[in-house]
Image 1 (cartoon, rainbow, N blue to C red):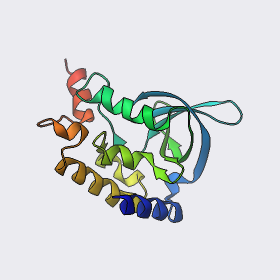
Image 2: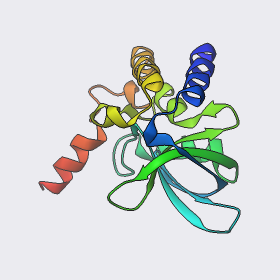
Image 3: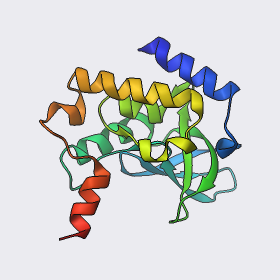
Image 4: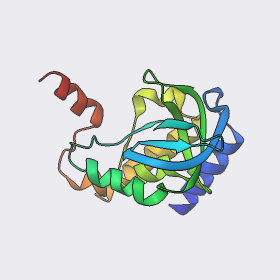
Length: 165
């Protein structure tokens, strides 16, 4: 697994897609859930960051709190780098978060704390698509995190169910 992480990080650094053309460095000051953080840069500006290519369970969904805590324990209070190229409809930066040489997006998927969000695969660097897909399959096979439950509901379906209530 470590080889997979290092290979995907190296590949993504050498082959950034146009969607990931800039880098933000900052201190993580908030982790509201398993795929969103707030980063404060050197100019003391706050940036909301949504993890590109993954979708973690909602807080009020099974495993949502645990997956948010998993992310919090990894990077809260730490300095991270975010590779990004655009913002979402809510004004959040869409990016890949690195802590040192670790791809945190990929770690969330490999630990069973997020799905690979295939709907937005075109925005994910080509070199990471396979890594995210393989990490999800491995987490599912090993029944890690959200995969420990029978028939977990993907967050995009959970949100749709909530809207239709």
